Amino acid sequence: MSWIFAAVALAFTGVVVLGFLGVRVLLAIRELGREVDRTRERLEPAQLLLIEKVRTIRVPKG
Image (cartoon, rainbow, N blue to C red; front, side):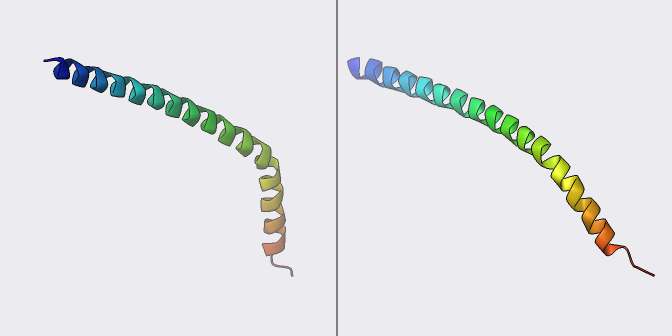
């Protein structure tokens, strides 16, 4: 009978560990999303400049 209690305790501990790691993953995903947004905001002016330069190169002369 005591092995049943041990198995239940191990299962519960495993679920707690998985829950803790799941929360850490969700927090890391949130931080990654913020970092991607910051990077996009930093690169947007350079992207617009590059697009404008490409358009001026593609304009046919004459």
